Length: 268
Length: 268
DNA sequence: TCATGTGAATTCCTTCACAGCA
DNA sequence: TGCTGTGAAGGAATTCACATGA
Image 1 (cartoon, helix red, strand yellow):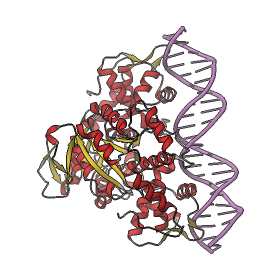
Image 2 (cartoon, protein in one colour):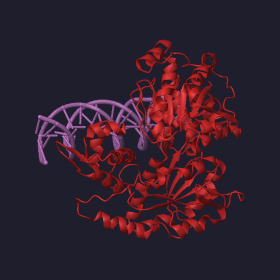
Image 3 (cartoon, chains in turn yellow, brown, green, purple):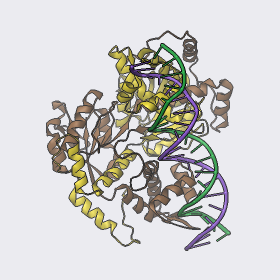
Image 4 (cartoon, protein in one colour):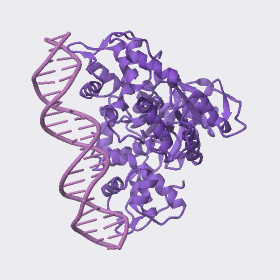
């Protein structure tokens, strides 16, 4: 999950609810796929299925954009693609810089999904002088010293931070001072930014922790329930291995401890 | 942002709201940092600031876990760390497999945040025979053929998919059939999974698109507003470069077109 | 006295169900 | 007839504001 917003009190961005905005890219992706298969129209039902939402929600979402469908028929795929693209601002070019070219930064630089949706990687920036000049994804990495110049020369308003946590706040300040007003933050830190700057956060370990929470609940429901789930699926699961038995036993034991004790969990 | 849930109708996981669950890892991170600095107690106000939420929300969130604070004083840092860890299921060991060892998969394998929070990378799996045996993050990559065996031998219940979009659905099916019940999906596809399996989705391009939406709005408010924002910040922004002027002009022009036309946006 | 914990109010989001139009 | 578009209902999440207890 990504989280974190700033600027603009959640809803009200000319009336399109934040939750709807977050789903538009999903619809767009599904529509693009249909478009590639030259499908001319879709019903809300079909499109909703493709996007993984329910159809009432989808129709409500689209109703905020306008009346782009045809009753009794559905939506014109190409037309909707255009309308949503325009609404999201993807009909214009968004130069983006990626700061921090480690494993993750390189992955982002190579990620095709950017270019295909109006985002252009204008520069890759890293603090390590040894990286400078090295090609990543067909682009030379530039040194942090150039950051301000790059931002200004390219009119960059969106920055992606993929640095270690310790560097993120300072990088964000430099980005913002140079003119960036939207930041996608992969570093596991809460950035503090001035009003008017949007931050979105993507945090890998948070996502896993949320999964662990639900996983724990499933396991807690007892082996019977777990087995039922596994087999109901139609995926011939050999029931085995759903729960690491030793692990669970340990957890339960700890849970039973007297209240006061505070085991040293979480080394870092 | 990450999105996507399945299983369990949103709220009610023994009463802890989904929105609260999603914030627990944030609190945990902030608390861990305090713990490392040997801070003994925090107030809801301080902790909320560190986690980037407001204090009323934080107190309400904690109230779902129990009464772990002391009125007039605050929360015991170590104790809260323990309680939240336990609630999230992090006091037990979660073996995880990563499937798809490209740039992103490698980045994930190297990501320290996993190990430190109870997640243990049990195996790296890739379909490319040429990758097999190659060490990534100090571990040999294993071939997809081994997938089922690895899952079962290690009691893996959480899988991370970092493959290309085309492979994701099939990989998820194999993971699930072998016993995985939670999936973190980085591939830009909607996975269809049986009931009882949780899927969370992390989609880089979706996050950028959401930022672009807000960025467009800011620009649309007129240069005056943009400039005001830039300077109000205290970050001496040289006002320049907030909007790529040519780009915007083009977008606006297109917007003014007669309704029927459908420009071919989005090559892919 | 001071910060937690929580009912109550509010706002936001989702879902229902059907009127209205092609 | 069939599917969109949308008021209205229902739920969930956030925020307020203050009683409560260390």
